Length: 207
Image (cartoon, rainbow, N blue to C red; front, side, top):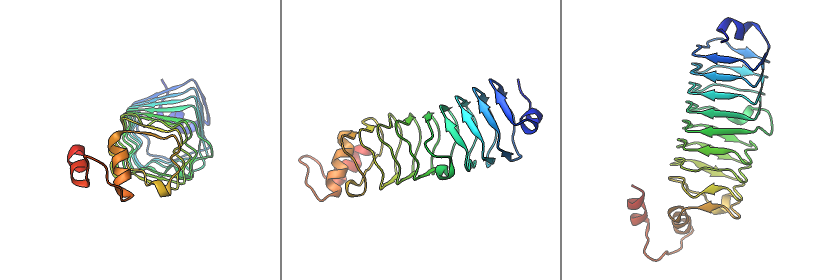
């Protein structure tokens, strides 16, 4: 099992496990392949210009962490606290997945998140602005207050998402799958009348 000293001193890591470490120093241009991070405490940490390939983060605390110019390929986050992270500065075309993570107040601006899985996450008041979310999966994710603006959600799955609202005129939603509740909210926002529904009754069902 790798130590914090090893993490700070070396630059290239292959198939290593970092467990229950506390990171307080910034990391620059580190490369990780097939590595596992478990129980890492790294709130407000800085990972700059690095690369993660086929890595997993489990039960890590990364609130407000920064990843400028960092490349993510085949990286999964499971049960992690990722609140307030601005993912907008990561390297282009990441391949990521999030499972039961806390993504509240996160910001994704102009990020290619095609086929990204957000399963069972809390993404309340997260921002998805000018993002490619084609075929993304938001199963069982709480999107209350999340902002979708100028994003492409074609073929995305939001059928079991909670609190999702997609302004139709501001986003591409061709073949996007949504729940009845979301469809009603979108219709009401466009000024339509939906039989058996009104704004008050929809809020009541939501609560």
